[in-house]
Amino acid sequence: MRLGITFAACVGHAIVFPNATQARSTPAFLFALQRERPNLQAVGSSIETGLDDAILSGISNAGSESKSWATEMELIDESGAAFHALFSGIRSSAALGVKGRPFHLKRSKVSSAMKSTGEENPFAGFFTFDDLAKAVEDDFLDAIRGSTDNRKGWKVTAVSTPRGSSFEDARMTLDEINTALEKGTVIINTAGSHIPKLAGTAFACCDASSLPCAVNLYVTAAGKRTSAPPHTDKQDVIVVQTAGSKRWRVYTPPDPSRKPSADMYARGKGDDDLPLYFLEEGAYGCQKLLDVTLNVGDVLFIPAAFPHTTDTVNDDALPGNPESASIHLTFNFDTHVWDLNYLSARRFALRRAGVSDPALGQETDDDNRYVGNVNSLPKDVRDDIFMNFPLTFLDEQDSTVVDQVTAQLQTIAKAVDKSTYDQVPSATWKETVERIRAQGIELLDIHRVMYLDAIEEGRLRKAEEAATAHLTGQDLTRARAMTPEKMQRLSLFRVKKFTEQINEAKQSLVDWSYENVSSQDSAQISLPEDWPFTLPLKVGDEVEADLGGAYFPATVTKAANNSYNVKYFDGDVMDGLSRDMIKLMNPPEASSSQGDEEEQPPPGLTKKEMKRWRKKQEKKKKKGN
Image 1 (cartoon, one colour):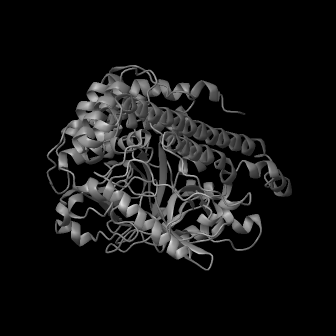
Image 2 (image 1 turned 90 degrees about the horizontal axis):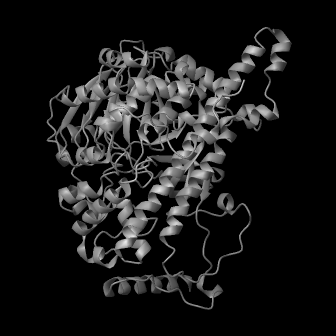
Image 3 (image 1 turned 45 degrees about the horizontal axis):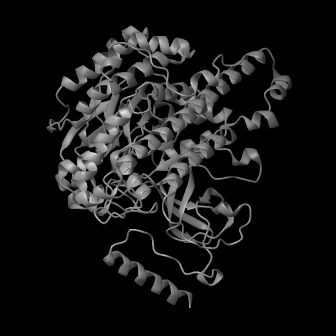
């Protein structure tokens, strides 16, 4: 039995059903929503209910559309309508990022709003510990465990290590997960691409939001004083509690001008400490907004850059019993990750035009654009440049959004620094927005096909189980034994091709931005075919590192004895990776003695920058001698 959805019918644009909800998702409405600057009041356990009511109304209004979508996609039985309605309601009514507001929706209210989908209590028990056990048994999964010290930055370590050289010895086991739960939270990143039962939810998130979305799975034992230390994220996240309970404390974003060298979207990660007592005492201007316990079926929304921390000490379940663990799904509205924001667009436009950026700096791909001068901009300007594009940006049927985003980008760029703005040709701003949009649509298509592939795999497995259900003993063992064909269908291999496509799409945008920049003549070393996984690494190298079975952008922070520590793009840290778990992104350049010409300075440097560049080159030559 194969999935009755043809990929061709689904690729190219998210399927959207027009109704009243969509009317609230027009570019004009979303621009107005984003530009609001709500006065966030710390109110202890709740935020004023106006936003909650708007979200619930959006969910209810989306019910009929979402039910049609789930029927079309054959996801009615996977709670597709309910998840699609949830994300549609949030898309239509919630601002994202620093202009957003967190909210908590209790199960009873969610159930009432979901009546129009035909699923009144869809999230409670949707994914349990038994589902996790089944996923581990059926596939080759990987997971990480988070640290639990609320005084230090959040770090992660691998849950599983190979026990031998065979395929079975390399697979993560449920026992390893249970052992990890004694020490901290177990996390499976991008779980929707690896676990078929979660693929439909991620697919619904993509189509409802018109974004390349991901879902992560979090499992925490009861009785943990800290399950996640205080930190911020680059993603706007929707948390759905499917089993157990967990306490969440959410605070207003830290004022980045008080620590410009810190990435406000990765505070409390790696070596950046964001202790709980700092937040409680109002350090960096933070105020507590929410202090709530999510029970099964509840929903929580946390905008990007809002610090949060969790624990399970209020859980009445007995500690040490895995089946009573807290389980929640975190759905990511990824805009910063995919460059769908004005800061990234300005950077690409200036680079495309060959214009240097003395105002903000951080011009190379290795530089974190969220640190430095950008954090010292006036608050209104800083909030605007950090703002994401409207969620209609990747809707292909929207013919006006490019012009609106371009106009907004020019206004923001001019406010940041008029000198650099004036040097960029007018056409380049729109060209940049169009190119970012093309990449976004391509990434959305890749994610949709990836989730469809996982959905199909899940249905194929169910069909195989049904076909062998009558067998027993050795006959059943042989029928369900791992074969080469089945092995290639495991997520370890199935997801790899999509990860490669995503990386190629991202690199294509970077290459485009450099097309008009004079290339520097530098001979390349003759490299072996597998150089990304074999050449030596050094601290500072730009890489992609394994995180839960998929590769994500990272930087090497320590290298010793074939063991490497890395810091991921979102601030997460992983220690002790082996060389084959890290992909070097850029081949090393040959030394100057291998070329006939000296390295030329990049175009557009000021006199001060040119002086600094020449000093840097002199130091390189001295080291080479």
